[in-house]
Length: 135
Image (cartoon, rainbow, N blue to C red; front, side, top):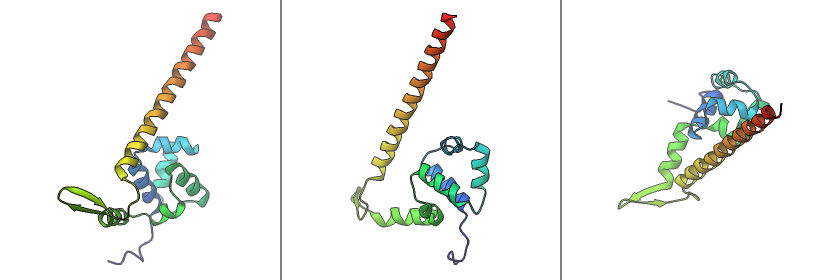
């Protein structure tokens, strides 16, 4: 099978990268100011308008080229070519960071973000309660 002639499905690539990032459609939608349904429609489209693609790429932390050229095979090739398992220890060849560290880092960042959001909600409730008592 010749994959070079197969057109890239940009929407599917966006969906896979978003999933690999552990991001829900709703979170992506909120980040770029569109509805979750719009994200769903984009992910179902083979082509995506360049401006939208730029906004999505920025939120996902990748380039538009990375989205356009993304493939599960490429990800598996990168993983397969950068790790050599020998005597139960992973030896890293060519990969300049530990993907697990990046995953933990992203998880910690999400945790901090959620904590800030929860605190903002608590502050808002407290403020509204004060307003109501003041009446």
